[in-house]
Each structure stands twice: as structure tokens, then as C-alpha cells.
Amino acid sequence: MEGKPIVIRELRPSDVTPVIEIQHASPQMAQWKAADYEKLALNPNGLALVAELSSAPGAVAGFLAALAVGDEAEIQNVAVRADHRRHGIARTLIEEAQHRLAARGVRNLFLEVRRSNAAAKALYSRIGYHECGLRRRYYASDGEDALVLRRELSAG
Image (cartoon, rainbow, N blue to C red; front, top):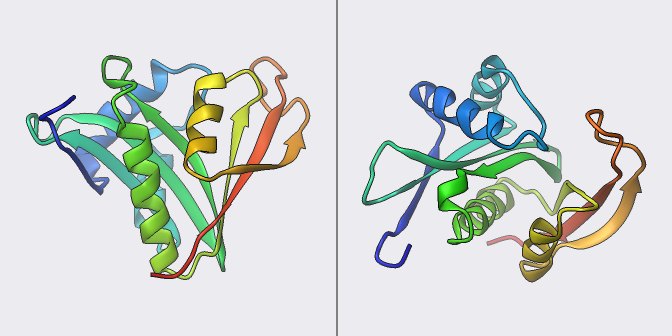
């Protein structure tokens, strides 16, 4: 993706259809309804971001959904289109979410990841997430365990 800067912006109503398409192409992730993303985008404690390449404005390459409660937040869903993976889009989405959430006063950011998802675990480790718990049989689709990861955010 060299030469194709990533643009992160807030989710718009017109983004929901491509977000759902990306989600459906990743059956291992939480499968939300369109209304769930729309509701999150309108929630003052919600954060719904999309990534697009500056070379393809309006085309959603990935997305992130998070929810803050007080000084804690959880990344609830994050995914990148299969043809855009391994080019820094997920990392850029997560780093932008961290920045925006820290600006809101969030100090601890959590997420769950499948125990078997080596690529995601490696990414999260590289950007400062540490294992802090285990949710046994967390994923309803197959009963796989989830690792709970945490990253401390700093103001500014």
C-alpha cells in the first residue's frame, strides 16, 4: 500500500453497507446488524471509524467499533477487507481509536481476541496490548476461548 495513505474518518450512514460486507467476509468476528453500527455512531460514548485509501475516497477498506464507559473502553469489532490486509490499516484504525479515546479521558482500552488468531495477537502485542484475562468458550459460533487484552492510554 506504499504511496496510498490511509484516511481514517467517522462512519457515515452510507458506510454501513460496506462495513457489513467486510464483516460477513470475516465470519470469525462478531456479526452485528446494520442498526448496531448506526446506533453506535450516534451514541456519544461510541466510536465508529472507517478507513479508506486516499487513492479510493469513499471506498471502505476497514472499520473499527468501540464503546467507552467512564475511563475505560472496549474495541468491540475491527476488520479489514481481505484484499487490503497486512498493509497497516488495522493498526492505523486502532491507533486512531486510541488517540480519540484518550482525548475523551479513557485510560484503559480492552479487547477480546480469539486464542487461535496469531496474526491479530501479534499486531496487538506490537502496539502495546497485554493479556489480562481469559473468557472461556466466549465465541458462540464454535466455543473458542477469547483472550482479554488491555492497553493503558495516556492523556495527550
